[in-house]
Image (cartoon, rainbow, N blue to C red; front, side, top):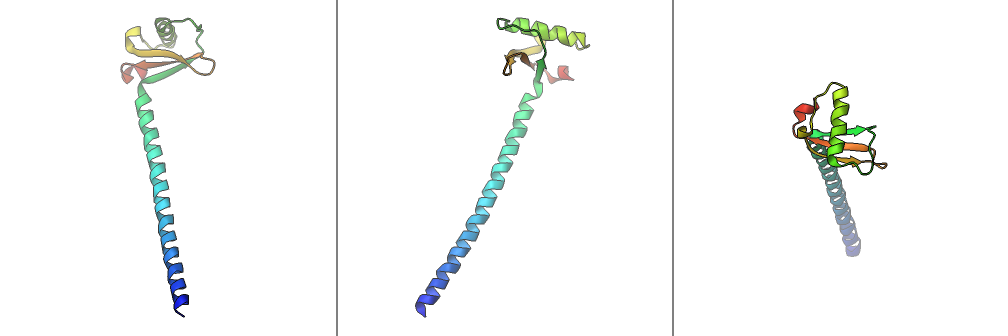
Length: 111
């Protein structure tokens, strides 16, 4: 009789602990998802001054200044006035490296 009661006690205790572990695991998973979404939001906020340009005729040996000049001439052709002083950085990206990312000094120029 005592062995039966002890066994049932431990079974109930293990079930309670298993339930608590399940609740904690769910809470940790939710916190992980929340942290992931907050990190993504922060990364997007940081990139708000960036502009990605594709379709430029660029070569492997184009310097940063040449890339900026090509981006400026492209933007002027669509009615957006940019000059080299409006950029903080400009470099090639993409698998075929035919795209350019430019970081503007002010996002007001991006509008």
